[in-house]
Image (tube, rainbow, N blue to C red):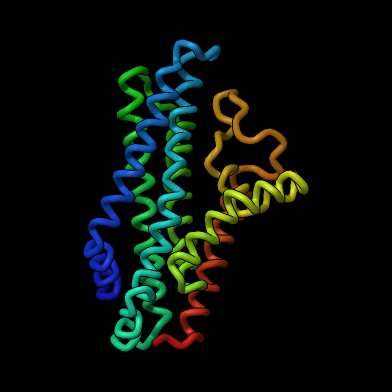
Length: 247
């Protein structure tokens, strides 16, 4: 508990960065939800389809949780405080576990905030009652945000460079994966971004065929693959923190 409190306190002591991420997330999600919900009368399937589309806007949160996870770890490497942290707690694996726990928790919070923003924004255009399938989608979005927070922390621990980790993440998800998808269509489903897309897509609920067409696996498969990537990167990051010297 002491380590968890210490890591949470470190996040709180970087208010400008945290507030900037939160405000950026809220603005982007509200804009996307508003533009989607405002087209409800133009949708051929009506309000129900629009509600699904607006909820999926909340997946924007995973980008921010990935970056926040990276920052939670690399702040200390950038400012040189990681040495004092490891001296205070020589069991480095405990330090990394605490960082991963806080990264996952803050990721879930940002995911929940993103969902709240889209729901409140949607109320200006659409009156609705969320179905069980839509609640399940919301849960999967929050779960994915938590996983990608952990993955970001693992990537930050692995590279130990704030700029390097953020650039690597964006190059992979925005450039590398789309290029791989063009050349190897079905293989791309098993990459981190493909698994995330499937996890946060619609499921087969109430007769609605949802999710990427031709996906190689279902929602449970996507969840297992996403968890595997998050855990794998976290383990590699922890190994890097254990074996590499810090100065």
